[in-house]
Length: 336
Image (cartoon, rainbow, N blue to C red; front, side, top):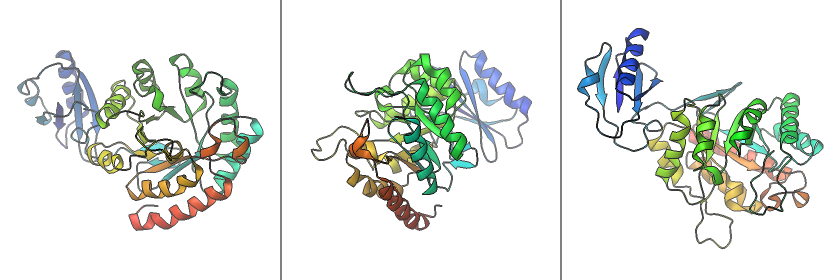
């Protein structure tokens, strides 16, 4: 359910409507808009009588929200969510490119790649300090040491940093060192982790699980937002299908559908979908053409020696080629 406030509603009237929602045993979620504030309501297991709220001072109307995902829904918040990160606006007219190594391997490797991707136009640096690997014997990341290296790379280059959170126990440490917290595909339905990420005061990028439906994806985002963190970025990274030539199948069609029904920024990770570097650039082009707000790609100075996912990492010349092609595409889509 959604309470729509008058354009001239006072802060006291908005607070009064929130108190009335709490008095019903429900949770209010104020959503400021361009011209008015709306208040989303969650926590009800059955219908709520709109008459209990429609007569409150400052209230224009009370609307039933028909979909199970409430806070991510454009019915609840028609305006696009813009996430401000330093001088960047995620979800606005600017296309955002996140680039960097799959794993933080060494200080020299990470700082070297950070310098090079910034030089070629990347706006955010990616790098895994904690790595979820299918095999327990594969490289698992440097942990806290990797976070310190990422923080050093940010200090030198000025690039904000995104890295994955895998455990609620590491949430304080990760939040302290990164600018965007990533929840990986394997943890999309780790509800304790989603709730903990929702309590952080950093933006969260949520990756779609490899077998998740659109509804399951948005309900996972709902867990984060319901805890008070509204700065959520959705990321399509490929789903498991029948492909025998790529690691996963990139579901390009979910991009315009997500943009239609949700207000959250939508990114695409073509590296994890492809599993092969020669497919990454065409998939990145397709993602931007489909309406994505940004892409995240893996880049390594020497992919053959990478400790994880070297086959899908772009070389530096390939990254430069990709950036040139995205610069050519962006104006056609009225993006920067």
